[in-house]
Structure formats: structure tokens, C-alpha cells
Length: 154
Image (cartoon, one colour):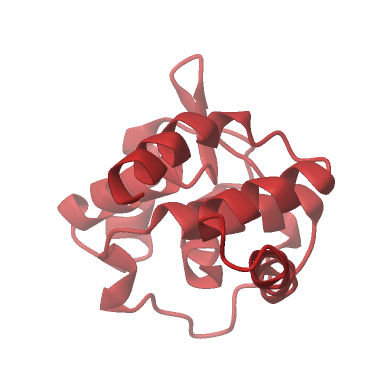
């Protein structure tokens, strides 16, 4: 998911702003950076909003993290895989990593350990919510989706 964070951060770093209109975000990805088509940029916007890397306020997009702290690798170009639907657990993990200022791998490790310690008696999404809460992240926004997943899968 670091790749998604690079893609989301790039338009904000390029425009040196803390907010932008959705169409400006899409324009930046497709025409300024030439990374994707406008349709793909729209899809990235949806994924970023669903992953809580971006949020809307007063019709403007705002990053849920500080883009200036994201070091985009020189010559970075997003892979085609980035357009694939991001799973709920990936969304939760990315949010926790962003909220807690931890490396995504550390968060994944904590969640996996908790999941194992609970002998797999809870879904990994539930273990992620527990870790997120312990790290001081407001994970309430994910409860309904996790409940739906647990009800469907369990």
C-alpha cells in the first residue's frame, strides 16, 4: 500500500497545497504526471477515499497524512496492480500505519501476532481493529464494514 500513498501524495506535493478539488487531483494524476487515464485517476480517488488516505471537507480533498513526509522514489511510476480493489483489511492496516506513524510492515506484524494469539478465533479485520484501538487510532469508521464482513463470512 506504500504505492497508493505515493500516488495520493504526489498531486499534493506537486501543488504544495493541503487541499484540492477532486477534479484537480484527477487532472494531476492523468495529465500533469501522465501516470494514468482520467478514468483510472477517478478509480484511484475512490480507492484513496475508501482507504481513508483522503477525506472530503467543504468539497475539497484533504490528505489524512502529511504528504511532505512521503519520499516518492525517483522515477516512480505506479503499477497496473494499484487499480485493483483494496481489501478491507488493507484499508484498515494502511489507516493504522498512517494514524500511528508506524511502518506498514510493523502494523501487519502486530496484527498477525494478535490474530495468532487469539488462536484465529477472530477474523484478521477484528484483530486489526483491536491493534488500531490500542495504538490510539479512531477505528470507529471501520466497525460497520467489519461487522458486515464478519456476518457474511462467519
